[in-house]
Length: 123
Image 1: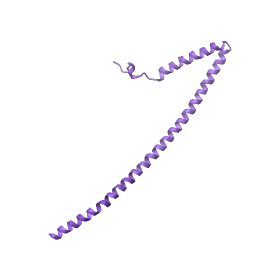
Image 2: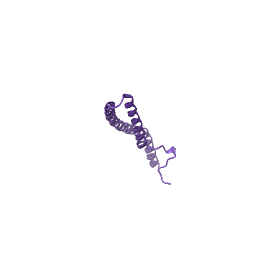
Image 3: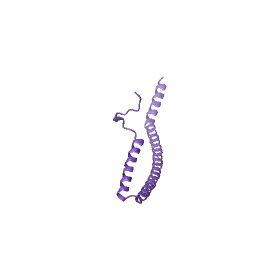
Image 4: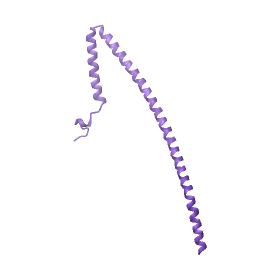
């Protein structure tokens, strides 16, 4: 019986000696997993930021191109109208048309605010 108890005690002592080494291995594995996940997140963020910047560049180029086209069209319209009217009349007409057009576009493109009391659901 005593030999059995001594074997259990030796086994228990060996396991207690292995616990710090096991803890170190668990922590090192955890650190490697966290580092790998950090590299994955970093690569995903970098690629997403690159795609976002590309889209912003393209959108800004298209907006500048469209704005220059609108300015050219308004200028040509003003010069055409100037053949029949004075400049102050032409500028007044173009200004009124621009304000009315902006209001129409605002009402069509921007949805009403939910706090305004307008409900889209039928009662």
